[in-house]
Each structure stands twice: as C-alpha cells, then as structure tokens.
Length: 254
Image (cartoon, rainbow, N blue to C red; front, side, top):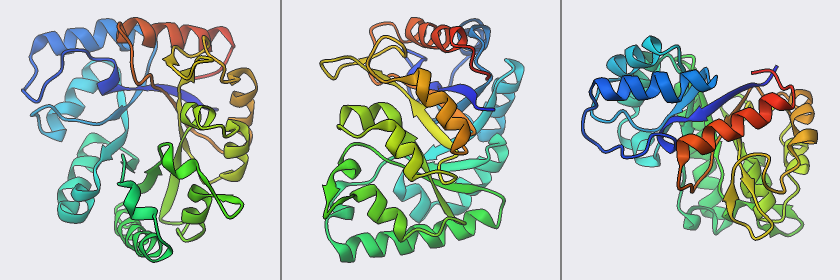
C-alpha cells in the first residue's frame, strides 16, 4: 500500500520563523487533516521544539514521516538532527538539496558518497533511514547514465536510499516510470507533483505526468509513501485539496 501525504511547509501560507499559536493548530485541523491527509514531511519547526511540534501534529491526527534537513545540519548538527527526528517520530531523515558543484567531478562525487554512507550509518544505528532527495541537475545523462544513477552506485543501500521527485523527472525529460524501475526497492518515498505542457507546476491530475500508471508501479517497486507537492501555487491549500481529491478518485489507498 502506498500512503499519500503532503509536505507541510508547502501548504501553510504565511508561515515564518516565529512561533505559531492556536491559529496554526486550527489551520492544520481544518485545512490539512480534514482534507484526508494523514502523514506529512516536516521541513521547519517554526521556532518550536520537535516535541512541541509532534504534539501539534498528534492533536490534529497527523504523523511526521520525514525530517527534511540541509547538508550543514547533517555535518555540523548531527546529534540534534537525530534527537529532533526521533522526537518527531520520523522514520526518515531526508537531505533536501546539495550544490551542483558537489557532483561535478568523479573525485567530489566519490567523496560526497563516502560522507553520505557514513552519515547514513550513524543514523541507521538510531533506527533512522537517510534519504537523498534529488532535483533536476542530477537527472542529466553522463556517459549513458543519469548522474543520479552514478551517485547511487557509490551509495550503500543499507544506509542511503532515494526520495524520487516524479514531477521533476518528467520536467527534465526523464520518464518517471523509468526512474521508479531504476530505483526499485531503493526509493521508499516519492514526491508526487505535476507539470503542464509548458513545464509549469500544477495540481496532480491537471498536468502531463501519467499517475494512473505510475501508482501501480510504485507499489511494485517498493514505494511506501507518496507526498503531494506543488512548488508554486496562488492557493496552496486549494491545490493540496484538489490533488488529493484526484488521487482519491483514482481509487488509490492512502
């Protein structure tokens, strides 16, 4: 079964780094949980402790699956990252993004992979799985293979797995189905987003990404969670609701 969730920061407009109050809880209850979402990815604690944030999610029937972090948090604040992830109840720690320069040469790519393997090993000892979340630049072809493939040949599957972005794949000219097959049993999480014929992000079901055939393939390739994401929207809450209603209409379990 593939469970469908959403990325919290993308659907809560007007958020800042300040602490939130009762209106936040009301927003979560009325606009996220009420849509039918049950799981979320956390990308920002907004001034709260991880314990406080988990309580807020629990109060609204939501569960954090992923703690999404930056590379400096893994390098310089690993103990805190581990503590926050455990306090949130997350199963995964996802690296949000790296600089393109990190993968520009074989030496830098090899060094980065070794670093990720070691970080993943440490996280694994606490029951946490490290994920690498790609963007578009890793989907270029180098000597007949995707740069993302080259990186993952150097990553230990026990310690580092993938979080695939199916919308970015389609927008980069890479068949999302091909990507799912390439990373079968190595991508427990995916980002579900859609793009129109002009390459603009849109609600799931309104673009060109063929989710009617991708969701069955997700089940076959070991995907456990699919997180709805839309990079840009004038009405993010409405977009999140529209995307989920489309997926419900297809009969997918979540």
